[in-house]
Length: 298
Image 1 (tube, rainbow, N blue to C red):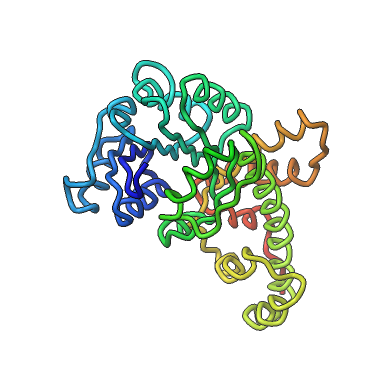
Image 2 (cartoon, helix red, strand yellow):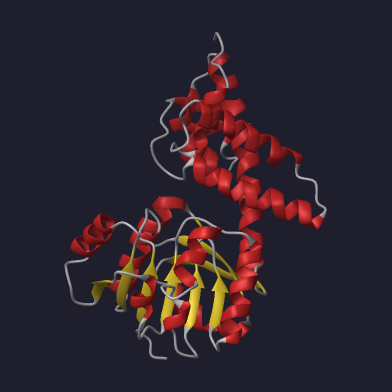
């Protein structure tokens, strides 16, 4: 395989659209598929029109002649739809092709797809990402990968177009389970941060000075650095939506149950997010978790 590839990209959402654009900027040819034609047309227009960027009507059509298929869709069902069946991408690929899935899905479907790809002479990497929309736009995502050594060696140079940190965790499904670790960690941090912001505000403290004081110590986190001020200002219209976080936590809780692992804080925070969804905040950033906590009287 040469340095520049013929790539099919499936899913042009807030993550996939920028990732596909970075692939174009890296010199690859990208044929994209998205369920909604309007989003496909907008992506093609932003890419400068036809050339190395093309649009296909089905995943199968997008994958015709591709050396690499990359997916970034919604959930297990969405992934199965774009990969399997007569309109799916897998049926269009020749042996030796590479499939990279960036969707956050269950570890089980990742393992299943890896097996299906191996049976067809294809290489598969489950590669969920972290870094949100900002990371996708900047081409600075963290990518957790599962798959064989050979599959990862093929995928890593392609993913450099939008990945700042790319780590091969282990075999098929290991990328997805590592992403579950990531989401479990974020859930706990945001729960504590929500309470801290409300507490500081009720105490009448200067919020900027508190951040300056504690963000240099053991309390520091990405969430604190990037969301403290916006949480204090009740600003939530950006970043990773609560609806998607609940989907991810559902996969994590299900996998924990299968492993016999207790994740009580994660389960509780998942319920808290359900409360924010009931308040109409499902499409707001995950930091909107603070909305379920009333403001104090400071």
